[in-house]
Each structure stands twice: as C-alpha cells, then as structure tokens.
Image (cartoon, rainbow, N blue to C red; front, side, top):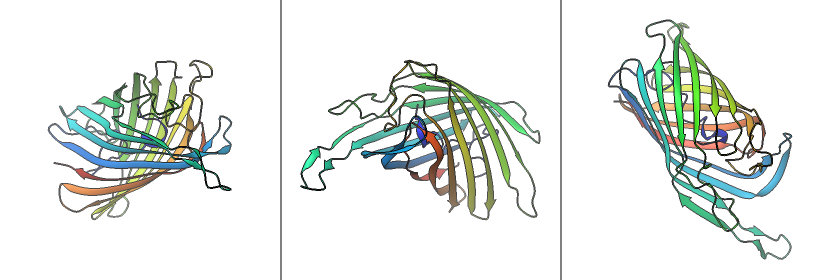
Length: 284
C-alpha cells in the first residue's frame, strides 16, 4: 500500500463528477482515472518532526484508479500504480565537481489496493459507508545498489474505513463535506495506524474544486528500529497531516481533467516536499 501522500491523492473525491466518500456508486455506474504522480525531494521530516537535508530522491507513479457499482450498495474499487520509477540522484562535490555518490534507479510495478465499499444509509441526508481495503504487496521493497530504492513496502495490510458525507444548498450551489476514520492493520514488522480525514468540495459549471485534510497516526507497535529512515516513501511509523487542494475540469459529459498538489503541514519520517498529480478521468 502507498504511504506518504500517495494515499491522499485520487481516493477521496466525491460528487456527481468525482468519486468516493460516503456515497457508493449506483449499480452499473463508475468512475475511472489514469494519473501521473511525482515527488522530488532533498529534505525530510525526522522522527521528531524536524526537517533535515538528504540526497535528492524522486519517485514517479503512473496510476489507474477505478470505482464500479456492483449493486446500489456495493462498490468495488481498484487503485494500482502499474509503473513506478524510484530514483536516487547522483551526489556531486561542490568543490571539485566530481561525482561523490553515483545515481541509481529502478523501475517496476507498485502495490495494489483492492477495496469493497458498502453503503450503510442509502437515500439518507447523511451518506455513510463502510469499506474494507486489502493492500497487495506487488511492488519491490528493496532495490538499487544499496537496497534503499523501492516501488512498494513488501507488506500485506488490511484497512477498515468509515465515511460520512452530506451535501447542502448555498444559493444555487450544492457544496459537500465528508469525514472519515480508518484503522490500518499492517504486517511484516510495520506498525498499525489510525487514519483520519475531512474534505469539502464545490462544483460550479464545468469546474470542481475540493480541499482535503488527511492524517496518519502510528501506534508504533511494530518491530523496533525497523525501516525508520524518513527518506523513503515506505518508512515505518510515518505520521503526518496532509493538505491537498484539487481542481477538476469536465470538458464533456463523460470526460474530464484533474490535478492536485499534496503538502504536509507537519510530519515524521516522510519527505518534506510536495507531491504533484495530473490525470484524466472517465465517468460512463
């Protein structure tokens, strides 16, 4: 399963033209997106929340995301970065110009998330749902000449999530809000996590804007001194509060473009740089 802000991107949108939240998809309907996410960083949050420099690293994720209404209550969801490139850039002496540490990179597939969502309150003013997510460790958990490059975390996790959302009228507009809480059971020596989030969005003509807050709290019950370096997207005991504004444009009844920027208001053991994502979605 993707850590850091990767999980924030793409999985929390909701509305007639976007997917997710407390609303399951109607039977036979869906939402599908192809997107590119990337992060390039030369600094990270330490285990006490301070920012320290590091050699420049980057990760690039080409993702597919899809929701499909199996029934009016059950929705199946797939998220998979089917191509991941993890890069450690070379370090060059500022005095001599010589290469101190050579660059390195690996390419591969990433971990896949499979989710089943069940609508608890169909037709009610407050839409609530329960979800079970399974994180499949399809990616490479160690790679490169020093073993620190990764396309996945190498662990199978199970997450239970509850969402509650509502829409309301403001003039001629209908903004919405959604909250969530989740427990993520992790294996392979990783600590379990509490996850939480809130978002609000508004559609106006062909534009849809949303802002999300998403956080992770680690129970720190995993193996001690295990994968604790904050320069990895897949470190153990990651904690943060992420802020992600997103803007989408619907250029036809079924097709649209979307882009967002993910930023950490604070964090521990994560890269201290924003993520960027652009994509195209299809809503049949």
